[in-house]
Image (cartoon, rainbow, N blue to C red; front, side, top):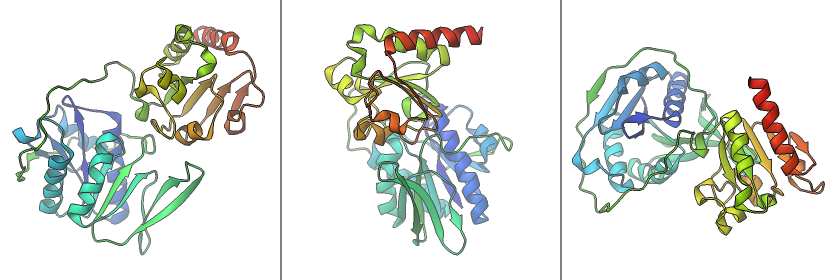
Length: 318
């Protein structure tokens, strides 16, 4: 059986969770078994996970799980996997999935592959693909252990409604008290998708000359419904918040469209964005390395191009 951890945020499921469930259903199909989901805490619409491939949804409830603690959550999910006899455990490759995958693998004595980006194959051996060398190559990983733990890279699988609501039941699992005391929780707010889940991203770098000029980037992003991002120097200077930093040392993203304005394209930045399906670069320096990685390049002053691009998009949408 394939078990998917369906993470909920404030009682609701985000796109990354639906992708993981759809991926679990496809993996179960390859293995000739069923896909089930497990949630932690009370969640709205848990039964709807059945529409994306989960045959049953199990809920784990405990006061010890009111705040996220990777040690406690890993023990709860490990207990669920053992109780249900899961052979494959799948999580989203977000901050939660990254912190849980290793602990789960150790607890279950399982082989583990993080950031998988394709449905596993099972032609005599269990193999799964992931990007390596900062996205410059794709590697096949073979897992020979009885139980496997996988995390799914964002935007790798399109979640589609393929079934109906699934039955939801309570799952009794021993949950130890957390050794972590949560004093306060501060969360980012906003209607746009977080960077790891975003399909459209507009990013900018030091070519913006100062934070006071960021309005044209936000206007372009608003025109196409994109999430904004930035290069590391911009975040380090304090022009933009650090959660917008994309690159090797920031957030790795895989959007359908990545527009980069005023970013030279150093290898560290490319490592976090070169899995984008389409890259558009706007830079007045014809020698900018980013042009070599771009699908489309505009060699011109961004302060002229970006407002005109925004205006053209608004006219086209109107």
